[in-house]
Length: 540
Image (cartoon, rainbow, N blue to C red; front, side, top):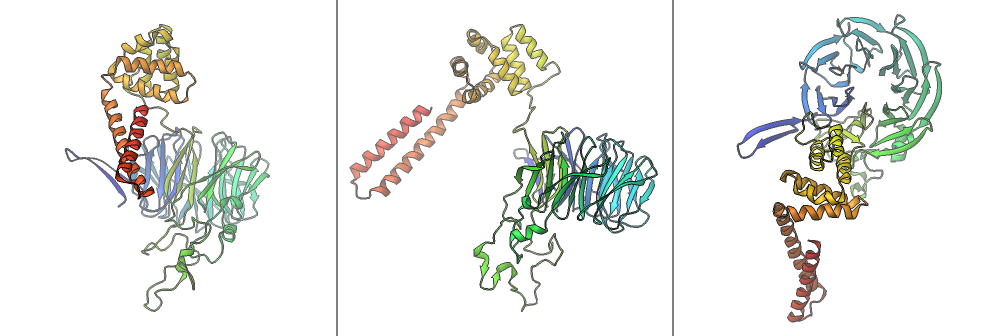
C-alpha cells in the first residue's frame, strides 16, 4: 500500500502512519505563508504536507478520479482541486471537510484550475469541450461559461493585481479575459505553437508562456507585445526510452516544458517538463542559470542518453523483441500516444518527468512533483529554526540585553535555547577572554555538551582558533567527568579502528610477501599494529 507504519517497540504502541500518493503526483501548490504544500495525484487524493517536518497531516479522498490541479486561496485556509471526475471541490483546513462542490451543466473533464486574488472566483478549463467555467466561492453557483478557444484549455492563471484571467490552449492562442467587463476577451496573444503553460510574474507586469515547440516566450499583458523568448529544447536533454527506435537527440526535438513558475522576486523562471532536468532561467538576460537533475534512478525509463549494449540482441533492442508472439501473450510495448504505460503490465517502467513546479512565497525554496514524488529544494541546508525548551521570554532582544548586562552565562543559555547558529556565535565571541573559565564553571550540565559540540564545529571553520581552543580546554578541564560517556564512545570507536587496521595489515603483509618467514611476519604485523596504535592515540 506504500505506507510507512511506526510503532514503539517496547510497549508495542502504534505511533503514526504516513502514506504518499499511490500513483503519479500531478500538481502541487504552496500556501501563502509557505508552511504547507498541497498535492493532487492520479489516485484521486488531495494531501496537505508540512514543509518543515515533511509529514502529511490531512488527506481528502472525495474525488473519484485523477486530480489534475490544486491551489490555495489567498487566505491560506481553503484548498481548491480540479479532477477528471467532472467536479471542482473546495476543502476547509479549519474543519477538514469538503464544503463546496462545483459542477458544470454537462459532464466535463477539468484539466486546469485558477482562483483569483480575492478568493471569490473559481475557474476551471475543460479538456474535452474547450470551455472555461466560472463559479462563485460563496454561493457555489455557476456564473459564466467562457467560449472562444478552439482546442483543449491546458492552463489557467489569474493576474495577481487585476481581475484578469489568462488561458492557454492548444489552438495556439493565449486569451486574456476581463472579469470586471462582462467576462469579455480583452486581448488574444498569437503563439507559434500549442500553448501548454502560462503564468504571471508576481507583480503582474509580465506573462510567461511555454509552447509545444520547446520555447518559453515572455509577453507584456498590457500592450499584448512579446518582450523576449528562450529556446529551451536543447536544455531538456531527454533520455532514450528502451522502446525508442530513434536516438535521444532526435527524441528531444519533440519534447517541451509543461510547467512554469516565476521566482518570488520575478527575476528568474523555473521550467520543467518531459525530462529529468529542471531549468532555471534569468528572465532579463534570457539565459540558462542552472539545471537541477531530479533523479538518478535507472529503474525509470528515459534516464540514459544511450541504450545499454547488454540489452541489445542480433534482432535489436531486447525491449522490442516480440518474445510472446507464438504463445498469444501481449507484447509489453505501449501504444502510440500512451504516455503513462500499461499499469496492468508486470514490467512497467514509468517515464521520468516533472508534472508541476511551484516557488515558495518566502523565496527560499521551490518544490516539484515528479515521477519520484514530491521534491523540495531549499537554500537552507538545515532547519533554520530548531529551538530547545523555548518560551516567550527567549528572544534575540532579551539575549542581547543580557550581554549588555554582562550576564554571560545566562546569555549563553538563552542563545542555546533559541538555537540559532549566528546568534550563538555572536554571544560566544562577545564573552571576554579572561571570563571564559568562570562562565564554563557556571553552566548547567545539559548545556555543556551542546556548547562543546558547537565549539568543535567552530574550530573547523572560524579564524579565532586560540579563542575557541580556550573554550574547549576550559570545558574539558571543568566538566571532564561529565563528558566521560562521550569519551568512552570515542575510545571504543578507536579500538575498533585499531583492530581493523591490524587485521588489514596482516592480510596485506601475507599477500605481498608469501615467502617471508614467520618471525618476519610477526615483526611486520607488530610494527604495523604499533604504528596504527600510535596514529589512534594521536587522533584521540
